[in-house]
Image (tube, rainbow, N blue to C red):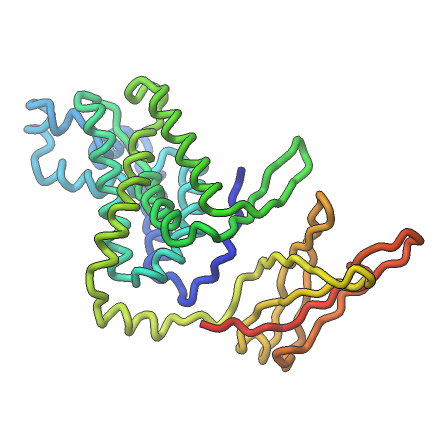
Length: 324
């Protein structure tokens, strides 16, 4: 299952979430520049439990370096696909959690979730000399928070069936519940770090995210965060929309709403709209002309129901402004 987007539109541009993605990409580029020193770089800045428990290693790297690795490990990655997977999940789920917590609290939440994930891994691998790297534990914390905040949201998911892509909306609590169950079963079936994946870091990060959400939700929002959100309010809605049109049984025409912002209505926009058709889903590029009014409808010819004689109805998308 490959998540493509969620149906909860964030009200503000996710400044901190995008910054975290940018820092992860930047650190990955620094990794690539290490050349033959890459292994030493990862061992130094990755999370190595033995550096805390083995006296010789602890003395060699020093307390400051070891403590810093509890932070730096979550910005390192083992390859491009590792980076892409983590950043894509952070992109999908992080904006909404930042929206709820505010940028300052969200930054603290993300780093704390990553720290908990690292400590969870260390607790079960105290003598391991294998470095653990990656943002997956921190991202798991974000997913845990999303699981609590938006359980009924839908996750537009790509399920590749051989070579045929199948798009389906899965409730967030089901998608994330399956994800967590797979992480837990993988962790329970692994032997330490033998698989090369820190499964317990994922489990610890997810549970930690749920606990941290309760804690950070009680922390008063800083005035600086409110100022940031005032200037980062979104002017555009998601480029990819999913509609579920319906209509009277006696009519071939179908109807649904297309949510856009007032800014998009004024300037014009285009959206990729996915329309379910039985067991298939068709994605269309719908252009919204500038100056359209709320309540106006776009007519998509031939995309309604099909009669037994082959006659096709139309699909009408009523313009609806997002209300925050």
